[in-house]
Amino acid sequence: MLRITDSRGDTKRVVMLEGKLLGAWVDEVRGLFVGIEVDSFPTLDLSSLSYVDRAGVEMLQELLGRGARIRACSPFVAELLRWDCKPDR
Image 1 (tube, one colour):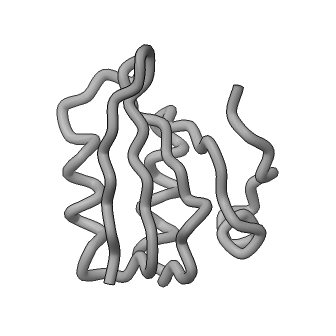
Image 2: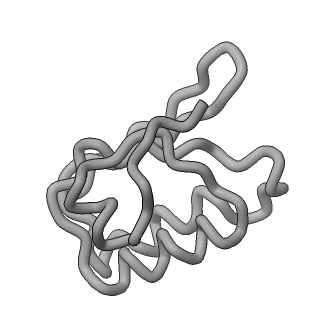
């Protein structure tokens, strides 16, 4: 199960993913980024993801390659993405 929380703060839109990011949910998450200019990409909060399968990792790497930013993530997700898990500032 994956919970997606799409919130808008004063200046930034943040998409928080909680639970397990599996193939069945990849298109749902990817759809949040369709038609959005790179400068307007939401920030991702992955701190509550407990598992990501191969399709999820590939999609997240694709989003990062397109300019998405990560606000927070667990050490597990950081290792999967080979990303330095420091908060986005």
